[in-house]
Length: 269
Image: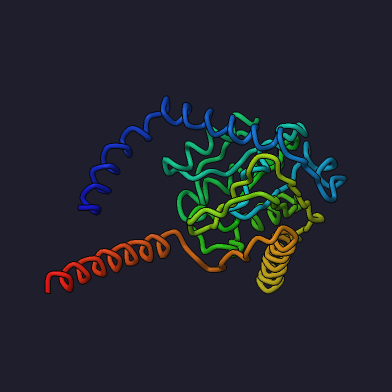
């Protein structure tokens, strides 16, 4: 019965959520909520000099998929000029509308969907100057906390630096999702850490490219976990994917349902 209800509910909402008007309504409500958290919290930016230097210059700002929430108002308040890479999926398009409300333009696609087009558009934006690019190197479906190649190709082909950023909060909830999305709560202490620029030489060999990817990944994981440890947030899982997480959730629901069925059978006996 639960599974049938879930299918009916999903079948009812999915067509509605594809409509742009409903996506805009949800995006506006989300933006109001994010601003509410930002305006009631104490926000501190570490290494802000790097952010100020590159906020209106060609640069690739990278952040984990589960750590985007409070970066949006920081971008808006600081007057950052940037494009954000967004998935073509309905969730990605809704998030693109939310990002637009914070002043970010969108490039649609991912490494698995329209990767070549995204790379061409991103390199063109960076070479034209005046705008940066924001991208989650483990999105849109994982594996979590693993840097994929896209951001490094942007840097190699354009000469723009990669700048790793992350935020954490004293009052927050970790959502039950593959990316362990961190939702900051009102009246928090919010810390945003801006890393030093990382440049990828245009003539980097495959080995040098891979080493740069590993170094960036290790830094970003360490950056996030050190910030979370300060606020007592448990370490996020690495290598989780959206597909595997959904399968695990389905398996857990089936197991729970089977357990209830067995208990009912035992009571009848």
